[in-house]
Image (cartoon, rainbow, N blue to C red; front, side):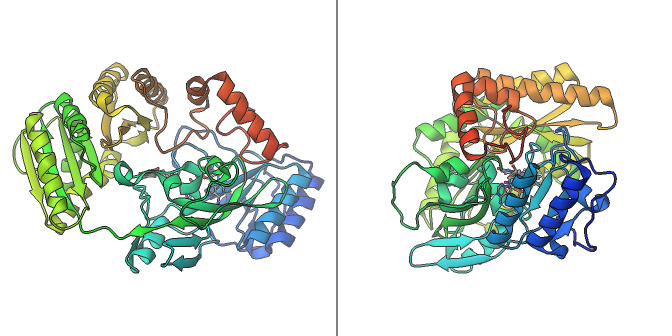
Length: 484
Ligand SMILES: Cc1cc2nc3c(=O)[nH]c(=O)nc-3n(C[C@H](O)[C@H](O)[C@H](O)COP(=O)(O)OP(=O)(O)OC[C@H]3O[C@@H](n4cnc5c(N)ncnc54)[C@H](O)[C@@H]3O)c2cc1C
């Protein structure tokens, strides 16, 4: 979302300020000088569009101003101006996040990075690319694929989220089981620090271990340590067209057993997704067609793919089919047909859209050991009964990262309370199974307590020490991720 700046900015009379009205006016002047009048907004009707991301339950405030820098020097000038005024900074990509991590705080300056959206270099000989953070993930993927290359991180929101947001949430997606998360595809970064200095981390070489790994420190820091202005990304050869397998199960335990057996058998599919009965029914109701043809709705389906190349991919999916059959699958199908494979995957991609027909959705994000996945799905169904709300479980079965999705009526305060209760209980259930409270969406403004409990006091002290060292004024995203 990038509203076009229309008018010369002034301090809006109703915006809360972290500084005096005079200080705010001086800051707005400094921001105008930093980015130019067309890249500064203070009109509350426009800045309101930048106050929240896609997490309905996270708190948000009203920014004093929103800026749209177009280069690193402008970002540095904005940061220096905010630091001089002692005003908080909220970095923002497309606002597709699911934790409130890009939500504004009252009186802050929101720095929207979507106009820094150029692919600066694609080096085919070294299989790397240099990009600005505002590039949309799918635009980048499409460009590198046109050169026979592949950028692996593929969040489901890839058609609108930005590389900068992906880096700061350490985003995952459907291909993580084989290719890992965002950090596994990053060689180096350029970051504007709270001092306004420009930090360069990492390298352009395949190997490189000089010094602390500052690249990995910044990745997943959710905009709390600096603003990423450039990234050097590792590319892979473009994989072969996938072979697809679908298996249905009469109970989730058998689906879970199939996943564990596939791991034990040494299979590494490029994708292995699970949908429970609630998700299957809602997609079928939404599309008006059955995913697997006629018959009863199964308790779960697994969709697997291999991109290992002609012959090998088919053998891998035949092996996955055998494993699923041994685990008690009631329906099995393997296809090399690309259109059929796409259709099956489309059913998986339609889960959130189809649940939306039933009400507001609230997607959780919890990762469990793969052997415990069925237990988590079972726990979600018990929680759904307790809170008397629909919860559909969809997830990345290959890596154990589940997205139980709660459906509720946002206009009913009691349902909102029950949805929030279910959200937390799912995280507790995941942790009790040896899991973690986020596999890819991050902590943001909604899971701070869960992070503190999972990480423990020593790790939280280390978090605070790092934050103080890099951002002593607590300028970047105050209140997000953990209490200072
Ligand atoms: C329908 C849907 C499906 C989704 N599917 C997935 C999925 O499969 N996997 C997944 O991981 N996520 C998924 N998400 C969540 C979301 O898309 C990701 O978290 C994504 O990485 C956010 O990118 P963004 O550009 O929207 O960032 P934003 O939401 O704008 O920001 C996210 C965080 O990054 C920070 N930030 C953004 N840009 C910068 C920068 N340049 N410098 C410093 N900090 C910055 C912000 O402060 C914030 O903390 C989904 C979301 C939706 C709505």
